[in-house]
Image 1: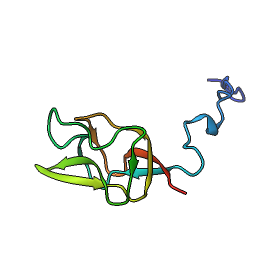
Image 2: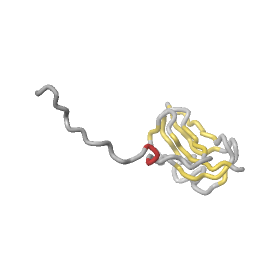
Image 3: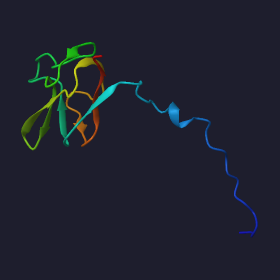
Image 4: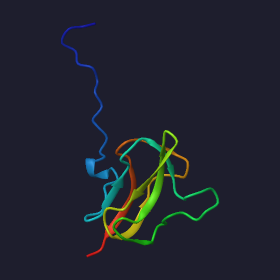
Length: 106
């Protein structure tokens, strides 16, 4: 190894931090309060609690998160329209993981 030589460092990619998918201004994200398994419907074969385009009210059940054999209903904390579902049925989820994006009513 020679003293005084610098390793060739390539410049960082030209992707600005904003290139990471950022939520639109004014959208609300519902996050999981617990670790568990995400379920979009109350039982297999049943229709999902909500889907993209649905209007929801405060307190309306959005999904179920199963943790330690307990089924925990996750409710909406804002009234508005479901813009995006960020989890798949049966998918393991983490505490704080984003589950839904809602456009609040004005």
